[in-house]
Image: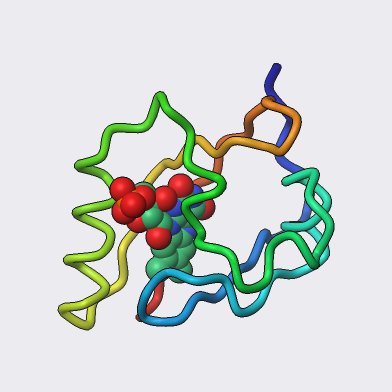
Amino acid sequence: IERPYPDGKLIVSRTDLDGTLTHVNDAFVEISGYEIDELIGKPHYILRHPDMPSGAYKDLWQTAKSGQKWHGYVKNLCKDGSHYWVYATVVP
Ligand SMILES: Cc1cc2nc3c(=O)[nH]c(=O)nc-3n(C[C@H](O)[C@H](O)[C@H](O)COP(=O)(O)O)c2cc1C
């Protein structure tokens, strides 16, 4: 089941250098299906969808670690097993 991207909203998260979530906005919490307490302090990996190729995340991390912005389509997994697509921008 696909959850539609919320109209007019931005889904925002911040991680530390290990990919641990340090901030999520309301739109992120809502679409993920998690409570905020279940997200902060957890690896961003908890949203990883098994359909996503690992090379996408390798590219994301290599790009961010080299100080550049990364853009790409990401399919994310919600708590209840549904999914949503984002066109993500990762800013180092
Ligand atoms: C700012 C930022 C946002 C990220 N957003 C996602 C995301 O939405 N979904 C996701 O699966 N991984 C995201 N990642 C990548 C994860 O940290 C992780 O690399 C990915 O889930 C794959 O796990 P792995 O690196 O252990 O294979 C993000 C990383 C950063 C730095």
